[in-house]
Length: 132
Image 1 (cartoon, rainbow, N blue to C red):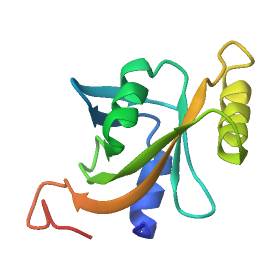
Image 2: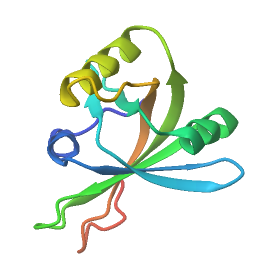
Image 3: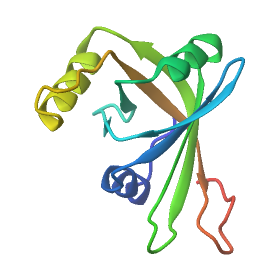
C-alpha cells in the first residue's frame, strides 16, 4: 500500500465530491460525497447508492479515484485495490459519518475500503502524469 503525501490527503479531504471509477463488465464512474482517510492510510468511501460500483469491485477489486481543486486545477488520481465491507470497524466508522451528515435520512449499506497503490498528478503543467 502506498502512503499518501500530505498535499494529496489535504486535497482529498477538502474536496466535497470525488469521482470513483470501477470496471467489471461495464465501466462505471460515480460522484462520491462520503469519504474519510483511516488511521492506517486506507481511504474509506461510504456506500449509500453504489450498486454497480460494488458489483464491479466484487468482479475485479480495482478502483480509481479522481479529484481536483476547480480554482487552482491541482488534481490527483489514485489507483488501488478495493474491498466492499458491510460490517466491522471501517463500516461502523462510515455508517456513523453518513448518519451524522444526513441527520438519519440516509444510511450506509457498506463501505468501500481502498488501499492506494498509485498516485498520479492530473494538474495541468510539467508534472502532469507524474507518479508520486
